[in-house]
Length: 251
Ligand SMILES: C[S@@+](CC[C@H](N)C(=O)[O-])C[C@H]1O[C@@H](n2cnc3c(N)ncnc32)[C@H](O)[C@@H]1O
Image (tube, rainbow, N blue to C red; front, side, top):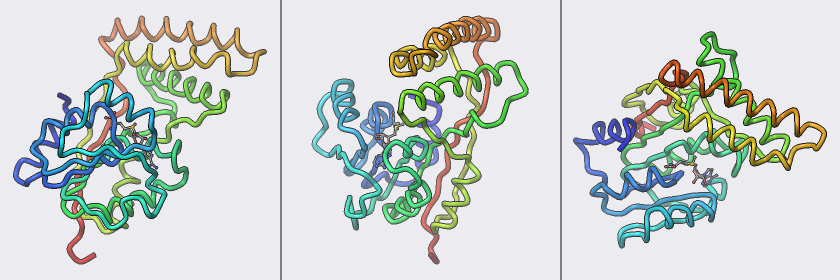
């Protein structure tokens, strides 16, 4: 299904899944979790639109599953509930849109929610430092242009957090790290088009006097990036990470 979900399944092979929480749900994580022998499955999103998309893509929930819309910044949401296995799949990087500045407290909430094992999946930030390779540089330029469009059209960009930050926060919150693994990323044409389409679809929302120059820039970057992707067989840059952690027994 995916290298990352395969890795988590492998890490979990010696323990039961039990009560499972998908703390930042979406089509990919829910599709995978439905294949597992969980006792029950709770999938949480901040957006009703996500619930509709998941049910269009995956069909109705099986009897052991509930999909909830809520906000982890609300202290009453799922208060007191605990889960044997918690999946936080690209949750932290998406939080700015729902609960800005809550990312460190989210790790503390994950500690309250986790009775057994947490698997946290994240994307190492890639739009901060200028990369030294041509492939890295073009991915960096695409990411920055996408964020520029989001800001100019009044929306919030994703804010990813480094693996080292997440590890430190997990330890501070009372987790012991069980395993960490990096997954090098090779961006394909689909990524290039999806990110630049996000820009093109927001053109009508940016200031009018910038539109024609920005539109030409988007299409120029698309041509350049697609040619490089074809020549190099993908754009290798950055990594995703998976961290497995368990509550520290003395915390
Ligand atoms: C990038 S998506 C996760 C990807 C997903 N696991 C998949 O398989 O496609 C982030 C998810 O976290 C949710 N989320 C982000 N911040 C949240 C918050 N403060 N409270 C509840 N859900 C939140 C979003 O609504 C979304 O469902």
